[in-house]
Image: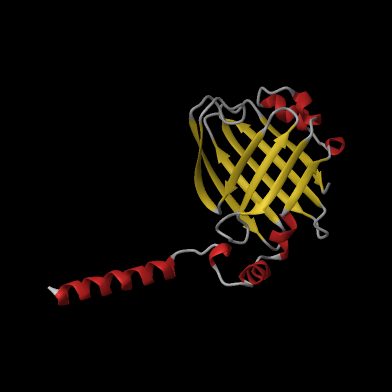
Length: 196
């Protein structure tokens, strides 16, 4: 009985060590100085997205028409629109958590993992359709061109959002394209964001 007990305990301890070795670790659980080495692992392109961005509505291109294609008030194109970009909990280059706040009532936080994922929503959405619902999304990251792209397929149609930063990290360009499922709408717009 003692032999089995010791063997079981050893197996449990061994399994825990294996699981702990496989488990992604967060900066708060690592040794001192780990955060600075992680930051060095994130590309300059990734770091150029981080922080607060404010949309410069004076430079919008076709945003009014883009919003109206979603049955939204086109005048929202001039509203205050802020985003805060952070590295997501995965600590992976190109994966972000983005919080968006606007003067028209938008207040949401989205996580963009790389690859395909499904986003669910509860209430009706002007962008995705009646709720509750699901949106099939895919996020891509290209460090070389400083490009983060998200494509979305919803009950209303297909949408792509491509964001790039300039070399200085002080200007972010967001190009959106929406194509209605029934083929009646194909509209694009460009938004420009700057540091506060």
